[in-house]
Image (cartoon, rainbow, N blue to C red; front, side):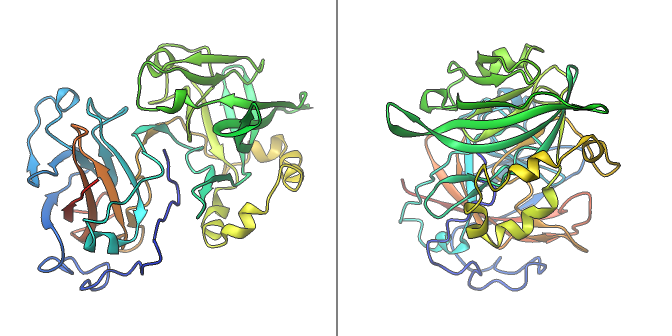
Length: 362
């Protein structure tokens, strides 16, 4: 799941040895661990990479193939698994680039981020050093065919017979219109555990109808065929019934998205937040804020462990100085990958990516 903002640095520096500035397309290409593969990336068509060789591959039927492990298109990087492919692939990161220097020292991923539908709610938590997921307490606007709602995530951990269990959500929400807002609704222990395995397509997870508070238990396939739900919860991933997420017309916006950057730099401040301290933030969100010109509602797209984190926007865009753990499509091998440079990057994509690949032991 998202490891949104996950950074398992293990106490090592995040600046890799032998690399120049992130904008230097050839920095580190001639030295360092593993192999460096040149991957031409188009904004219009995906490029596929097999990490075992490594090599760029041609795929006539990528939706049926496990011969590729990563795909690149524009500023998107996807793994062969979940909504992106038929394989068992997933990713985790970012982590320190220095892990590439120690491939024999297995990196245990606390989260297996399977490609999933996501959008406005993908960045709902910070990932703390204790491997816990803690809500940012942002307020989200959710627009559905049944009404306009404000939503706040209050927690990710519940209790079962006195034992703490992850992926049991606590939420509050209310319908809002020009005349005011409806009754406050809350839910605790909303079961997004998927019986401990989010990759199993046969395991159902919790979906929610905001207008009524009804909870549904749906498998991913059932959710994709139903317009009856608004939000689905599967481990740390929250999807909308719209766009890639489902056949409905649900859209959402993170009204506090501008705070994310500063929150990433001040984890302690986020962890100090509670449902009580953030109640005023929720209560002060009214119809005017939900419908302000800058509130850009959107349906879901595809989210991977790389989404929005493997590059830095700018003139020109620059590659991240971090690394990612990637599970191969066959589910039999794993790799550490990093981006040593871009050649010809612009706002449409990185041009050619210098992809460093290091096989790992598990």
